[in-house]
Length: 413
Image (tube, rainbow, N blue to C red; front, side, top):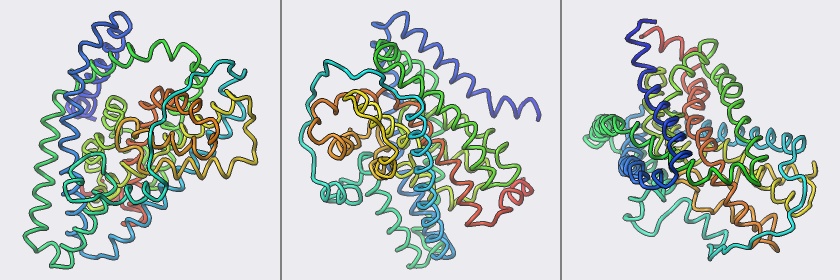
């Protein structure tokens, strides 16, 4: 590999990593000053969120509109959702087994602070809100990612039926996708400054809690995420891309992983994932459907955290995690995670669902514990969720373009 290629692939990642480490040190030594620089990170996150909504619309709608076959679009979507569910279930089972081997809480808590849960919608209302909004203006918010994706897919199908790639609308969507990706590239130049501020504030805010009562749970969770990245991700890319899949994946996953780790948002990582997919030779229509869908539906890290939360609170209340509860816990982990990873913290709807199903008579006590755990594990969980979207596109490519798709893409250069 030439020196210029190495610098191109890893130089900016090294700068971002250095900014993150410097920020952590700054937050540990000067916590008050770290709080003061927080706005520098917020500016970057806000800019990314402003770009993401139009990018998701034009990329998904454009991918569907420009497809030569609507059957291919349906196949890509069906395989994508199926893979998301399977990998989420695998992650939940792995964490359940680990929680049996290493319980996060050894002694029940004597004093548990109660918290305000607030008003929440009914189950039927939540299902409606997951996929639709009341009017068009509601689609213009990053908090409505699933409704936006549904709208974008249907818009793309309509454009395809109206003439497909030859229509002015399809050409406009493709052009706008290119423009938005260039826009993201401009914003990315500011990322090192933002990541310094973000990680300084994270360490200043959560440092004491990490060393306190939640330390044992985090000592299990963080290493598991690291192991998952270097075992499951290569296996997935090997299955999807063949023998050269893991190498290609590892060369390109760095930037999406760091962006997701810093922003704690799968949505904000969409642009980086799309760039990584393009460099990997993944078909554009596959990437532009899998990655935006994954931002709200692919959440292996959230499945990890869901099982951890249930096991932790059961330990707090002196209850044992039983093998008989495995099916219920895994099912809830997969279903409660859908639609939660689009925004930092997921609006705490996932925590509410867990409380209502497993701790209905102790919600005021369980809810603040679940929220605290969610905040502490959010960075690595989102990293698994978001960077995993790029990895899953390898598997979908195998089913959409054949098992030798990567060899053909690399041969073209």
